[in-house]
Length: 244
Image (cartoon, rainbow, N blue to C red; front, top):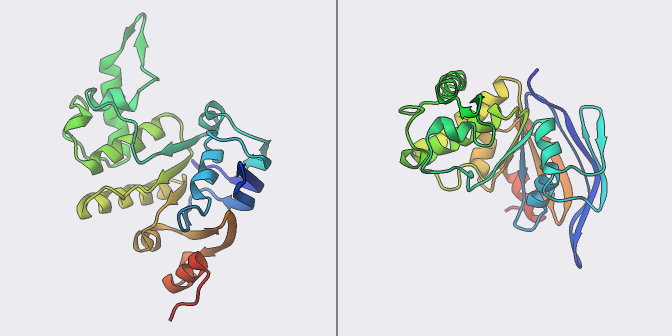
């Protein structure tokens, strides 16, 4: 199986007097999509930044398969197969599709970049992921928002990603591009990868997630299987209020 099993146990994180995480426990399984939902300030971004090695926890453990970490560095997270696709995508607009897929990991032949091999492997990867772009030699600045999102995902797969974290992946996309991105995320699950999606759009969450994990005030309120959950239940958990 392509994915990895990741557990976080008793994670705490504070910023001065603000307690961002208060003993978070959750498990992400291979071949499943987990949605992290909650209001602003619930702790979602802090949690995934700890998983990605961007922030150290004050307390707790990160367990990847059977390896236990007190904290991860960004390089360790990448080596373990944790790939984060942020909203800004971190693409270089003036460089072509293949160059962005291999960004920082360019293939070489002697002292020179092996462009023909990069083009060939980039094309093979895009076909495997069923990503449609005009050509691997086109600058990514000429692509649509959905195509750019797909290139960022392809780069994460090419880097050895086994667990993919998406931060509001459809926030800036139109209807058609949103559907393309959701389809690609589902495809990652079908290929056995582990996926975490942060989203405020509950309609999208219910359309792709296997599990929904609700955070409120730095704590996990509940993690529920989507198939046995109603949207009203999730809203109640997010807000802590009864829904009329």
